[in-house]
Amino acid sequence: MQRKPITPTTKGCSVPCFLHNISVECEYQEPDCNTRYRMKFYHVHLDPMFSSLLLYDRSCALPVAMASTPPTSSLDSFQIISSLRYDPAIPHAIGERTAEPRLLATPYYLLPYHRDRLLNAAMCFNWAKAIEFLRQDLDQFTQILETFVPNKSKPWRLRIVIDSSGLCKVEANPTASMDPLNLLCPSRNVSQPNTWRVYVDSESTAPSDFTTHKTTARGDYTAARYRSGILSPQEQAEVLVVNPKGEIMEGSITTPYFRRRKPGSEKDSASKDSGPEWATPPLLSGGNAGTTRRYALAEGFCTEEVITVADLVDGEECWLSNGVRGFIPGRITLMDPKGSERVPLPR
Picture 1 (tube, rainbow, N blue to C red):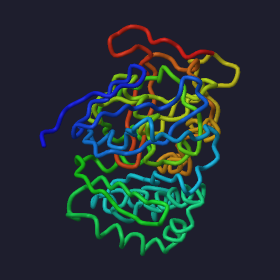
Picture 2: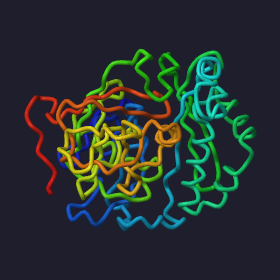
Picture 3: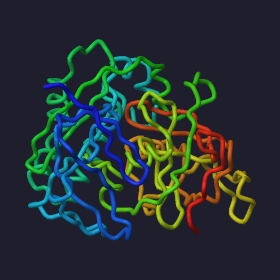
Picture 4: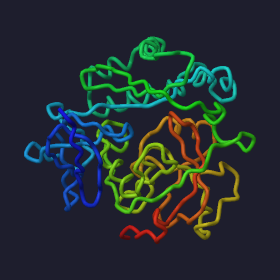
């Protein structure tokens, strides 16, 4: 059957995909912001970055409270996930250049933190079988991952996916080679990749267990990327997700780091007291408990500090990080891609 291209939309968010003559809608949240829908999945071909977009038949939608209470097991249709870089260069190039060498002693970037992150998510959602699976010895967990790596001489992006029954699968995709030193906390002595544009989402996102923990239910993040005009995972761009209080939660695919603000000073004044130069939003703002975030805090690269949209300065430098790309320089862009000023969030 020939694939028919269609474009489902939601509140101005255009999502290109291919469906086999199936008519669907996609919607993330009702206008009253009090109801979210659990979606019925269809076979959809999307850009890999957005492959977890939730598409559903509205007649099958089941309303779920926006509160942080986990959904009941009868409604579980999502998986917990964590993405990390496999790179044979890691233990040779950077294994001893960290406060905790065990974190970088294997080709799996920050693997102990990824296992911990998945375990914390399984405990949050009360998935007993997944908890049992993730409590196994780290060496055993590594052996399972080994079976999914196609060629151990090349770098890979590994996406670990675990469901409520404890079933684990790993998706391996090729990833570009990079200087492994960029997986360490930033240093002026290391050549850095190109600077990313960093936008701010024009709509707020309600914090929940699905923002604290990484799952396949990523509709809020996909919508934020489209609102900011980020249409491809190849774009060197990120969007900051904001909670209803105007606090930065995280990036759609990264943890952000901003220069520390000095208490009582102007918003564009960096802190000059002792301690880390950089700050990342606290988990209480609603963002994800990321692996590179945990690593950056443990290494003393940053501290936690509430950062609001009003604190940001157009053109200011920042850092971004995730488990596949390591640390990336960014620059805040408070203008939309067409050059006009972005509409601020309601205060």
